[in-house]
Length: 546
Image (tube, rainbow, N blue to C red; front, side):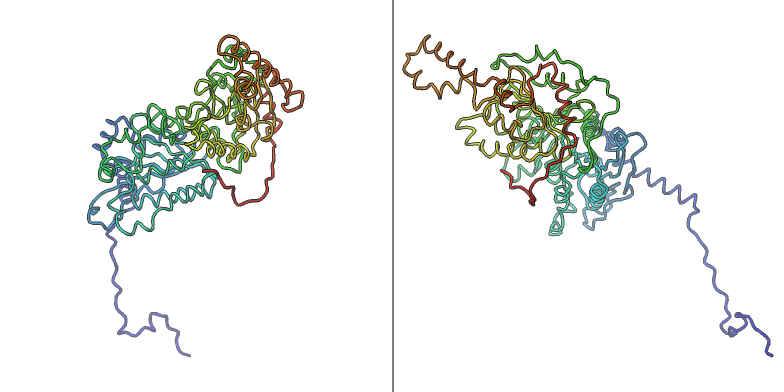
């Protein structure tokens, strides 16, 4: 029997050669870890000490200081720290762009997860590079998939022209389409903490909440250099699109704040009223200290019984809200209507209130747009609505007709009609004409509608009615005291027909209340309707007035 051989012995002698041993010359594990930490530290250094100092000299925090102050301590998980530009453009060769000028990640605000995209002005002026936008796209994907709010901190010169110029631009633009898809699904905040030009200007245009830092932030579709080249206009960033412009004139922004810290506080405050997504309910504040049955007798002095006398409705809201906490939206734009968030019995609500200090509380083109957008926002995220009505109706005249008051007013009608969240209405004084409709009158599915004893519900006020009903009779009386006295008599007769007890007698309002009990009445109305469910006819979407 042949002797057994091992595999090695079976290999022919000619093939028995020594296998060369490769010697490892790379770093040890501790050395590799040290190199990693060194790289990360370099990337966290942003654009370097000089650029950081420049950022501070402009009164701005760095992107990483902002993140540290925005999120709950120790909760921010950064993604893509080691990303940097990968452009083949000769102008970009050798440029170091730590995190590619865009810091992204997920942190917690009041314990709830929030996605972040924050542009770093110390790196190529915070311009939108290819790698940075890939990181931002991942955040949008996560926000939609995980149903989390998303926050942009914008301090950016816009698209990075060195990378974007050329026909490859044809593949870009998914950012804005995805923002539209996210709209009404997750809350979107775009905080303007510096410039935002072109691409980074459309982000706030599509976001839900846009705070701007006074004197520092701006947004425009083209920067001053482009505007000069395109239309020959010499204009500064602040003149063209500063915080004053967008908070007082254009209405694009929602709030002007003093500095970066105030801006970050505003973001946290705003999100505290919202659920993380449209499938959940707004958060209930856990430490309610303000008794819901608290009487509000201050209202006797704040709101005059005389319907012609003005007052500040913001004082009314602060008296009614839990702890006087009211978060206004667009307070400096379209000031004849006030919108914002408050809590009643620890539950968030959106407040829509007429402001008699401006236009007597009449609704003009911008006021209608402001209210419609706010109602749509609240309805999208299951936030109940409280209407405080003191409205003489829509503004009339050739000027507003040329501005399109009919189509703008139709937006407000559309929004209030479409809203399916709980809706509570308080008629404080005037409720005239279509103003009564858009401020959620009985026919607009008000879940609870109450009136003060000073309420006047009518197609128009007594003075306007006199001019129409008794026009011929008055024309027969010569100008003077007699006509004035007769006009007052007619007005008093009409006033008797718009008494709130008539509406209550026909069960067209649910109750007439002591103004001091308004806070409790609002809470009761919200409690009754908190499980509200309304089924609408199926449709792809309504056709909105433009």
